[in-house]
Length: 133
Image 1: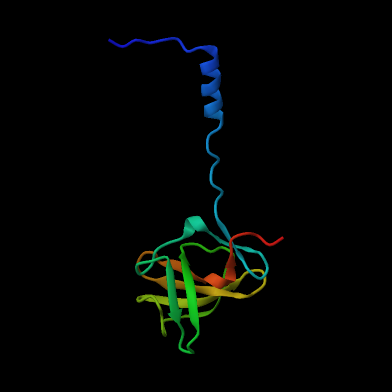
Image 2: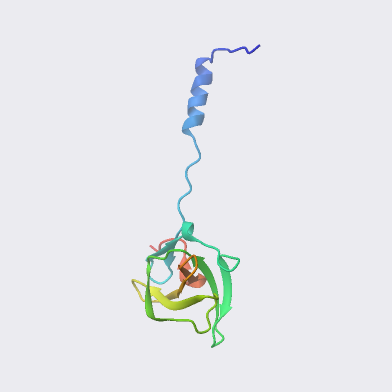
């Protein structure tokens, strides 16, 4: 047998207060150019490529880059023709990308024939997670 009891006014007030104090929504992570503050990409666009979101690679000159992969990066612009030489992601050609505002190199756009057809590998040290004031 199920017994129901009427809620008192004080209990009702507490319940309404509890409902109004819902956890605030997390703010979307935004990543900006460390030099000029332009919005480059967002945390929701992180993707895993070749087993991870983060990678460390070196180029033919021996320079080491810590990279984060993203499916979109509207704050960058490509420069030069795509190349398949010394690609870090098999089956993809790369193109250098720069900040669309200050022209600082931000990383590379990778283009291939399989999904995802385009993604961005951005240099960790060129990104900050809060807009400079």
